[in-house]
Image 1 (cartoon, rainbow, N blue to C red):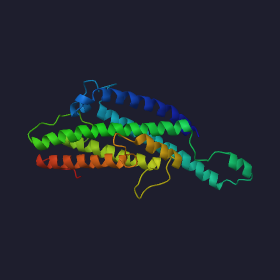
Image 2: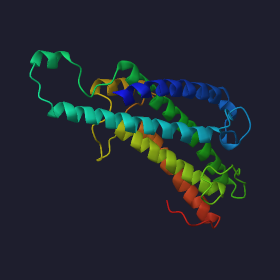
Image 3: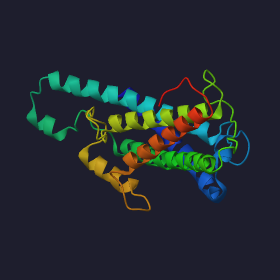
Image 4: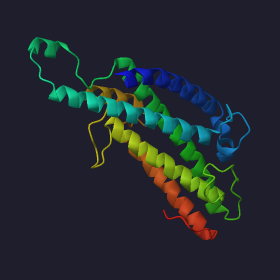
Length: 241
């Protein structure tokens, strides 16, 4: 499958890029805040991208790759199911038509786990700033360069759109990988064995794994709710939660 083979090189570079970004972020974790996340200056502004911009960019690219690979694998499975198999010995010795190589699945799972780490950093910074605003309503929110130029440049609007975007991206990634617990779950790219490997890699400091994506999405929804309240208090309307 040409698409799958071509995607491997891109995934490898993406995996390295994510690793390097997270290393820098973790090196500054003690001072990490919303300003470092969104301002186009400082140690987290790398290759002309803020950490927030990088989050959106790499998530979108990863989603695009998984979508293309999932389509290619689905077509291959469909073709195999309609092709007569006259030699059972060949059938049993051949790999499953939908199977991916071990390096491919390892790259996909590694990227997904690192994206979870990145989402957690982003949301922690956003929730911390929202807590400051609750305690001191007059505290200014940092005005970032617009992540979404077509919309109101108010930082609260930009923050809400950012969280909504990564929440949607995470949901779609789960579906494509096959680890979504939602009713819209479909056959994903990972086999049961590969999903088990992913669960192990997703364990965090608290030992959770299967529930970690849902925990992160819950924090995202908390942030969205916080921005909704913030915008209402400041009289900024036009967006619904």
